[in-house]
Image 1 (cartoon, rainbow, N blue to C red):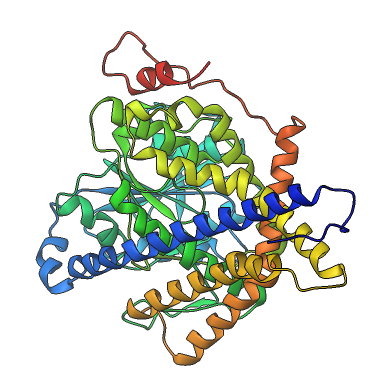
Image 2 (cartoon, rainbow, N blue to C red):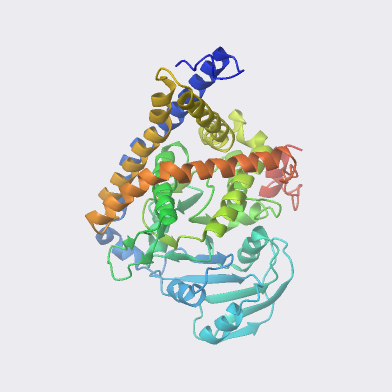
Length: 487
């Protein structure tokens, strides 16, 4: 893999070594992804067995099923609020509630909610287990006893999540963002691992990117987005958010990063004092602390992913996506800095190390070396003369290998029955090609910018752990987690 000696002032040997490192790193990373997709296949088949509605029908209709609180936080896209809440109130599950946090934005959503659901103020009889900013008012609905609305000033995503956690009454809590749509049987599918006795700490599912929900389809299939951005997001969700996470199940689950819904046990979240208010990525930060505590208590700490299409969301606007990706990458770097002792402590659980190394490689190593690879590629192509082996090797190892993985994920989705037509499959294959030509480079750039902000100190990489509420209590989860954290 020779880089031409007249390519500039840099040492030819150094360029050769850098080229080898870039190609080998992505071969290793993409081979690991291929292994995950391979391991996802038996996981997918086992999910089909568990999804046999005839076998589970009697169980799922029983009023003795565990109760669930659906906690909805965040600012919804225009037009979601009323229709989205109506769809949540129509879920097929015996006993559940919907806890909606209104973030205080003066957009008329609260007035619309009061009118649509006949809300009325109730006394503040919520036990504040986790401190939050002041709540202005609590509301209940005269029409729907399942609905509970919290009106508070916006003080960050973790504060909203904690407010919803405080108000939740039931032992299981489903955390989701406003703008996400749940399939009617979503709670039944998410609860299945608990119902069949699997030892898991939480159950997660990715939110597929769609153009419009096909409500009339009995299989819950959706119309995929046709735009360039929506297509790229749909491909990335299938590959990274659904089937690669499914492959992580046998290794204790991946560290949940962004998007989708996650079902927790409420007592676990309260025990670690909920979400850390300074966290840039609250879900990832909480999962790291939760797994550390559960492992220290010799409890099941696996985060199980299901491939069922239980959740969907419309593609975000470009500006919203840019801000969300920036927050995600900042949050990953913050978690690596804040919880490094927990993440790299092999004595407390070697099963967490592969997921940690995957997070480290994706957040730091991959974007830097990919940028170096593009620089070497440009130099090799611009220098006249012989054809250089680095060019085809890089194209095969980076965009070529990634394209093959995307097509593989599409095939898995086809076998899972997630598409309505061959034209939809062909269109998504086209988006898989386009993703490698522009969206991949954009994600790399956002990761590099997050690294630059962290290096310049513009991103808060706080190493302050969550303060324990009662360190003397041997059952205090937050106290145990705090003692494990680096100071």
